[in-house]
Image (cartoon, rainbow, N blue to C red; front, side, top):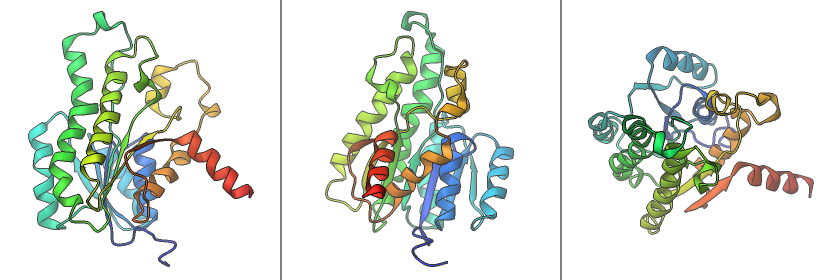
Length: 250
């Protein structure tokens, strides 16, 4: 393949929540672009299915079965990657859970903690352990995933919305801290996407009326490229898609 066809050839990318939805589509897309993907998920069987798909388009992925609530396991990830590869080029913090959709006073402490641990704290721990590796890359790229719910306008979305608002804040702060380094940080708001989480939140919605994860994945690829300069910004998929449409028409 040419360098143009494989813009991530020789680069290492870690994707969380890689077994389904947006994470799976992003993992496959990055692999098609030539990256070696470290695919992180909760179930080994689902990771093996992903590996089969990736092998059809690129080299085998490295599979990592990991419960993101296990902080000590996350903390050991950076040293493990350093011993094998010495650096990391792309980190996609995609894994998340919806949690309860109910009034804030009705959310149990356990449910609250579970959502915050997976959606927010895990991303902080991942940034902490991966930061030295990303800074060893000539063009480290961090892509975190937010949501339209992060602005707090939707009633009953408590833990999820608050965790995503935290992710946005954390991404912007980390970007400011990386200003004078090779690391660029972006936050993606994919909007309504055809995923199992979306179906759970909006069971009456026709999934064929909203974009599929494969539609959103090219945005992640663009942000993962060494030439990407977007930094500290929240990029909304629909805005990005419209901008591409306008550019293609001119």
